[in-house]
Length: 442
Image 1 (tube, rainbow, N blue to C red):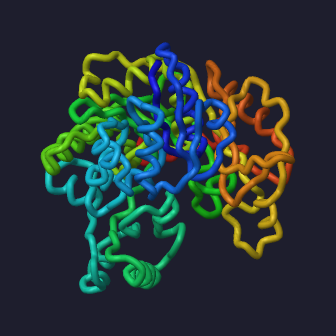
Image 2 (cartoon, rainbow, N blue to C red):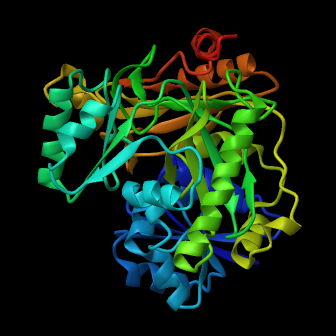
């Protein structure tokens, strides 16, 4: 028996819980959650509710249940130093220390690290702690991206053309961010198509998982406000239809060099997930940002395809021996569609805003897999919150089949809910293909 601690309460963690329990080692799962996830609770030997900043409570829960190691799902506990606290108690973890988690928690740290170690992929950028020089740098850029320097739940990046139009508006937004935080990063805007490259890392060895494309925009056709992610898809060849093998090779090479740079910079090996958000451009793969954990929804695309024992992978990450393990994934397509309250991403004044408090019912999802996210299980049923509710995943031999399974599964959720019906469809993917062909002059 292997006792494993899981920290987190979203759909990503529901998928992680499933992967942990599929281990041939007869794992027992102990889950620390800030909100009750009924899917994780059902798979767990024992659960504890608490805040991710309450490190003594997490450590005590791990000690009481004699866990061998912990798997950290979301970014908040990493930012709070949960891995450091567990290490002091003699408990290993799959997840970086607080210092190494700056890969995600400080965008300026990552940009400066990539620049210092001459790693390709960075945009033209500057970090500003005050307004001096801001206007002059904005004038140098053809297209502008503005990023607050910290965690924003995937919703803080401001892009010219999407969130603002003029350079004067950009300047105002920068001043607004500086009034609320210590620094702001201003970058050149890339033209291309984004892809998620989630890598497993033991500090030395970096292993790629199947590529995924996430969809941040709330509505079909990539319109509306940015969200935490409305869904994602992956393909049987583990590439994406609009990419070339060279794009993956460049993204993986950048991630390998960043892992080496982190070790050189901090003296500590990065053990966990290095999730690179990349964009394919006419000049190759460029780095948008790193996350220090699996993506949500992207974890739901790759973890169900894993053929290698996940608990065994965790042990190799902890022991620094990933190079000794062959990690394999099924060659299948996946489509994840998030079921959300109708009012998700809309102003509080919108008529659909009340949907975030409604009760829902779930019928037969057919061949689809269901992963709970932000839902409230009460005595009289399941209720929505103000965030994403349920990830529905279709897995099949082709993308078309996987999309149909996911969409049929979504229909089984009854209540004031919505989803993006276009994720994983040929029409939307063809737009990506045409865009990249035009950029590359093919």
